[in-house]
Every structure is written in structure tokens, then in C-alpha cells.
Image 1: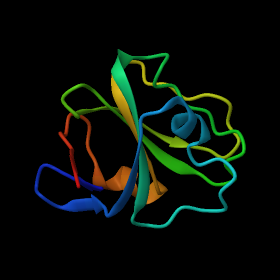
Image 2: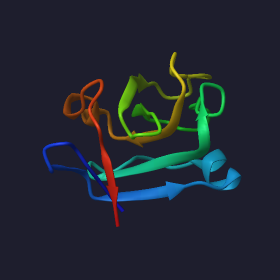
Image 3: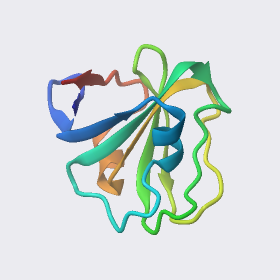
Image 4: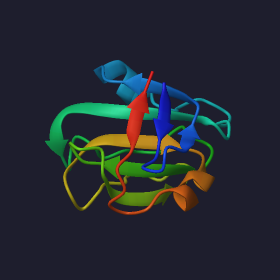
Length: 117
């Protein structure tokens, strides 16, 4: 899957959709790194602050964490640091896009993103 911004620019080429409990729990744990064009989308069935919180236990590298609402609009971003226990959006979100730290410079608050096969 790809992630595309409002201008039609591809932000990430290789994105894994994570909707099951197991795939969301595993996330990026136990990996050594993430490629510049790679990411994960942690998808929930409804918007929530608690359900879209993330941890960085067993993730030995920093990542971009981008929270999106039901319409896939960016509602919060953070540079999630390796081994940090907890990150959450102050606003309810339905999706969390995780990718390389440089991704934070390529998205803006309120921007609508698309997921394409």
C-alpha cells in the first residue's frame, strides 16, 4: 500500500496495514530500522485517544508518528523516541501512521492523506 498527500505526492511506497490486535501490538518491535519509503498504518474500528496510543518498547530507533481522524486528516504528530513508554494524540484518532522521522517534515496538521493499494 502507498500513502499519498493532498497534492498527489507519494509519501511512503511500502506501507503495511495493521488492523488485527497482533499486528498492531507487534508494530515495529524487534526490528533494527525502518527504510525511508516504509511505514505502518495502525487502524482502529473507531476514533479513540486510548486505542491509538502507541509505545516504543523494543523499538531501538526513532519514528514519525502521525495520528489521523476518520477522514484521514492529520490531527497530531510526534517524533516517537526509541524505548519511550507512551505517545498519544490529544484528539481522538482512528489511524496512526508510523514511518521514518523525515516523514514529519512532509505532512502538515489538517492535511488529508490517502491510502492506496
